[in-house]
Image (cartoon, rainbow, N blue to C red):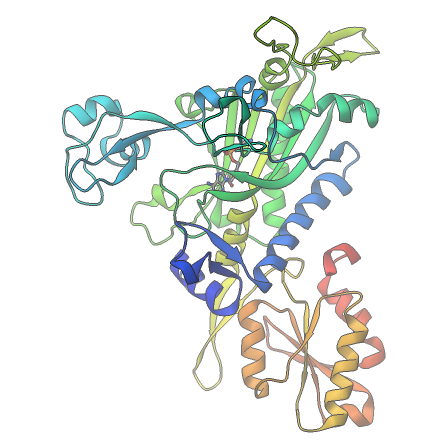
Length: 479
Ligand code: GAP
């Protein structure tokens, strides 16, 4: 079967309660989406898997959860106030706002965007006009104010964070000293980030509010390059461990001119998000970036910001974020290797990759979501074969209750068994457990496998262990 396009996933996601258009009853809000009952489970399972791979299964990484709204100075010294912008152009004809860098990439190759606009080489993709304004920088950070101040009171201006990374850098010394770490070590964080994207779209691929899973790995300068390479491989392996096909993942080395202001080298892990596009190159887009940020951020935050009278902003705080190596008696700023992934893009990639179709013996098409068991929102559905038989219903409900402390199980009796199986296949439930008349006699149930549709008879007393083994996940991953 050919790979599904995003539209197929949008339909499935809405129909089955993974993701809904946000604020729909008020006409929606641009490209904002809400996670429904199954979506929140899937997204939590993605985050849990990442946290386990980063924090629990290693000896050298700590986790934190920093504030979304930080002191404005953080974004001044990180460089975001000056440089975190997209070049914006307007179409004078239809008034559409466009990202000039995307137009250049898609329509005019190597020529500079200003020249391309002057020479009328760029076309508005909406109306085809070449009458476009000069590009101007548009800062992507959302602005707001703290406290009960007037809207235009600049002294109260703050931003919603556009990346979780800075919350880690400003806590570098706190974590270093409280956890008594030595280089190399890392700090991980999962949380919401906000960017006022000019052209959001493609479902949850690009939104203005999204979640990131970031880790800053601090290393001795000079040791950065091989460790960067190791993290590229680790991250690639993590996506494979989620069951994503290697054919749909590739590494992309960012050319020098694409690098962010802080990066020495960045390699993206791309996913084939757009298989329907004719141009093979445009089928791929970023799932995660793994950057070598050098000592840019720790140095930037060590600039000791001063107020207008020339006084240190916080004279009591140690704001020199350098590291002292006890063994060699050297003081220096560590380099940082940063694997940064999007939760939402990972959710989209696993949904696209798991989507498959199969015909049943009547020739009817069935959707099967072959999610990795660790990611599946529901691990087992307990289904009574006859919902009008109280003993069967009672037994099925008791089985569900006995399983729920160790794995996510649901009970469903809202249709015939064929329909119930199809429903669970479509949402990726690895096992259906059917309670029938025979179960009342032999204390056994039928366990049906989502991918093969094979069934086997299992004693109720062995069921929990049987499912745990077949799910092949630890206690953490089962829930
Ligand atoms: N701290 C580095 C950083 O933020 P990034 O490449 O801008 O790097 C990391 O973001 C990841 O966050 C991306 O690879 C992508 O998965 C996700 N991401 C970034 N912008 C996004 C958006 N507008 N919508 C959804 N995900 C986004």
